[in-house]
Length: 105
Image 1 (cartoon, helix red, strand yellow):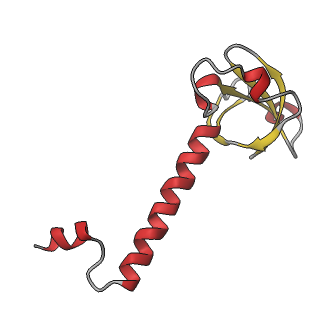
Image 2 (image 1 turned 45 degrees about the vertical axis):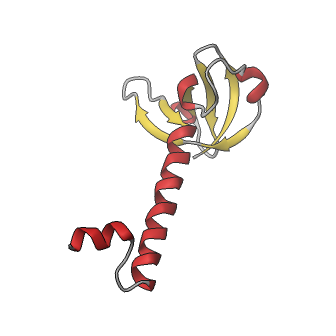
């Protein structure tokens, strides 16, 4: 999801989900899910109005607020790149990776 920072707190970032309105437009990114080092000044790293992509990891059904994560989005991208690499190796090599070869033994 594309989001924009509306407020920075000590606990994390309050964001607005772009392209939506109402309660569904609100979200929160905990400080631990920003992908920054512990102790980073989030106000400097994410000024109000900053836009970026984030992944929904949880939705509060009562408040309608989404809990988002930048870190989870990056981890998913890394996993996908690794899976594409493995698929490419399997197609191009007759035996796959070294680990695949060891499994067959």
